[in-house]
Image 1 (spheres, rainbow, N blue to C red):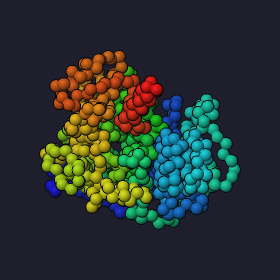
Image 2 (image 1 turned 135 degrees about the vertical axis):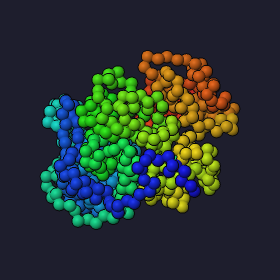
Image 3 (image 1 turned 180 degrees about the vertical axis):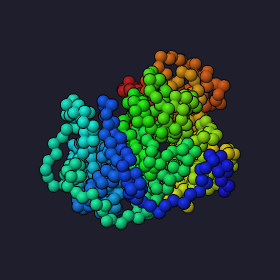
Image 4 (image 1 turned 90 degrees about the horizontal axis):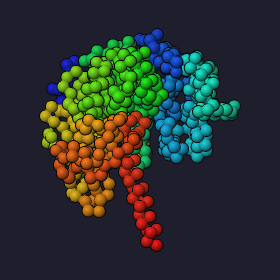
Length: 575
């Protein structure tokens, strides 16, 4: 297979790389040595204040916690769960778990107790490090899972003094952060452990091929699956990212990275946390995305790199007072998780002077596998080129055995050093997606003559109407061209005649109005007749994941509930 994408690389980006035989633990050790006094973490408060931690301090804190974990009985290969938002404790805990030779399982703070119970049972974690806000939920699950050790931390512990005082006075108790931690066996306070244990690096052997993390991802069955990533997998991807950024001139030990993507999600974990550690950059950690707070942070801390998702860039572009803030420090942003509309890209680049490039990744290959060039040709609607050491091909969607010609649609398959080893305790599902070193992504795509890849849709979200295959993303991209449309989601709903029909949910820009007929007329010259939406719903918002990805399946579930309710009413009326 000819690697036709190499000709489209930016100058200076290597076609292939040799990676150091390192663990993620060694990444921090190296940065703590080279950039000891450089800032590793910036944690903003509410009053324009912040707390900071150097790389030397980060390494010492992670060593202390690692030694504490070892005394609790954590062994090499054990799973340790983390349950907290972006905060210094997450970074300390992540590297501490690795230093103890254990496996990180980062869990989502938005999980319901049922979802949390499933994940804890599935991974078999016996230890969890948890924010006090979620302590009661975890204690309620403790007897139904394998959990033995619970380490509790409060968000206030690393807030700067003024913000901490305000938090204690007005928010800690009211929001549920203030909890009583009993002095009983196997329940520990985070800060007590840091005070008690040594800064000496644990003498636990860690190999690059050891499992570093289980990253849970949604499955075709609806049950979450743990993608197994080794140290080697993640180290390779961080080095790939650094090489892709060569053209924009990121300076080792000097840059700032905007950390509003959740670190418990593999996207933020790799592009913010591990990338910052490799490059000796300071990561600005914000627990949630709030447009004005992000703008203030960019204005104050001058980040060069800002990984995000389209909804974040849309919010910044549309913020009424965006001109008050100096955003010109930004050199590069990589956008993922959803299509990046051209007008969003152009306006954000106008505001910042930096480059906003769409990329693509997945938990099964943590985390970036393709990206548009930073300074060269970028193609609208494309997820870009396979990055260094990544091979991609488009296979027929039915059997996955025949490579498709350029320009034709099939399933995207990749072979790369970051591809996972499989799903935790899921041999059958592993065999479905990993075939002879190739990861079958479940995404339908095409590749053009320059090697740029265009995602058409998810295999399982394709709409089949009257025998025609319809790809929701194609329709959404047309709707994004409408000057009054802010967000759009397309999905299939049952139709007694066609099997399925096309429905779209639309969020309009503030102050705008438009009719269903106007939307349909806008689509007519741009889409084949069978692709034109038959049903249109205007909404105030679309359901999204924590990282801003529109959840089409939630819209489908809403339709199913409506249909069931309507059928029940019909049956009741007939009685």
